[in-house]
Length: 192
Image 1: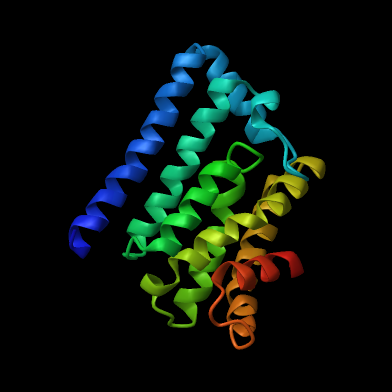
Image 2 (image 1 turned 45 degrees about the vertical axis):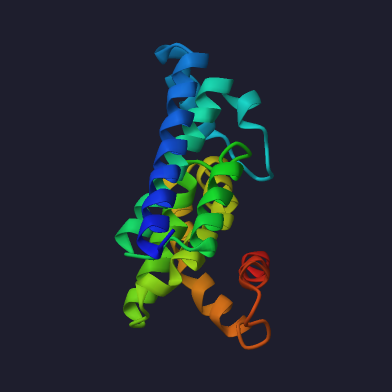
């Protein structure tokens, strides 16, 4: 299978996975309960990993995972990044953790912050999609600040700021761990 066919396969696979999760959400719940469960998931503080199925419902948790995966796919597309092992694993990490606390609201602002940092510093967006997707690990900042302090603006801003700082920190760590992507990004997320 050549490189173009592999990219098409993985692109279709990720979109198919997202759609299956969203459709499964509607199979498990009626639309009213699904929306109510999604609102509960979006409003939950997400300080620590939590089972989104217990916060909302099975259907809303699956739909949340599908929507979060679509955001990851959209980021890869916007950045015109290749679908290699790193970007696929970063997108699948978002999918998995969307069942444990991540949601579209709390992952989007760190991602926007990271993209802003890369654009302002003239980095090639194409090369850093996995790093940008890894900023979704900062989602507890957005959830905690937004819902505990009841300030969506403050939570969104601090999520953006943390996402803006993460690429710089991660790229500084690269000199010590150039071959281990997830280690350096995980360390940078932990430091922030």
